[in-house]
Image (cartoon, rainbow, N blue to C red; front, side):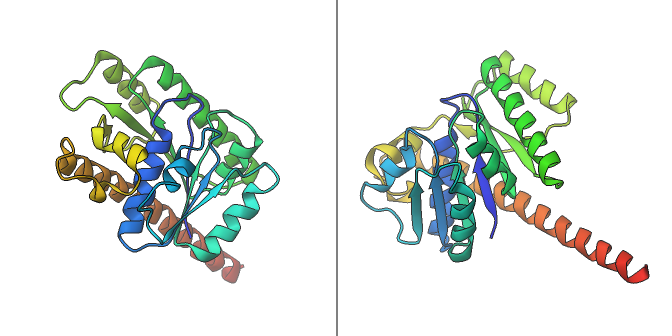
Length: 238
C-alpha cells in the first residue's frame, strides 16, 4: 500500500494540515488510512482525540528511529494508505521514512524562507534515493496561499522551481478558516457547520489536492511495474 510522507524542515509550512486533509478525505471515500504522527507537536494526534474521527482512520503517535520502518510496514498490511507527518528537522527518523515512501509531499509557503526549506527537503530526498538505489517521487505543495493575491515572492519561487525542473502540485492549498477549524473541533471538513466561511470552496480545494496525490502515486506505481516487466524481459533474453 502506498506510503505518502509530508516533509518540511521549516515549521509552520502547513505540513500537518495537508497531511490531515489527505487522510480525512481518503477516509471519507471509504479507504482504510493509517497516519503515523512523527511531529513532536502532535497536531494530528490532538485532532484524533476530539470527536468524529472516522473509524477507518487510525493514528500511530511518536515513532522513533528504531521503530518507524517497522510501523510503516505494519501499517501497510492493514491500511490502503499510510500517511507520515514528519517533524520539521532533518534527522534519521525523517530519512528512514522518506526511504520507504512512494511519494514525498513538501509543503511550502510562498516565501523565500520556505523556499530554502524546500531545497533542504529535496536534498534529503536525493540522498535517500542514492542510499536506496531507487527513485523517490516528490513534489512541492504551495500552502497558505492567498486566493486573490499572487505575491512577487511566490512568482519568484515558482520560476526558480520551474527552472530547476522540480515537480510542483498544480493545486495550491489556500488559506482557509475551515482548515483551522477541523484542528479546533475535530472531524472532517464535511462535518463542519454549514455556515463555516467558504466551506464548499475549502472542500473543493482539498479534493483537488487529494486527486493530484492519487494521480502521482498511481503514475509512480505504473512506472515501477513497467520497469519490472522490462527487467524480467531482459533476463529472459539473456
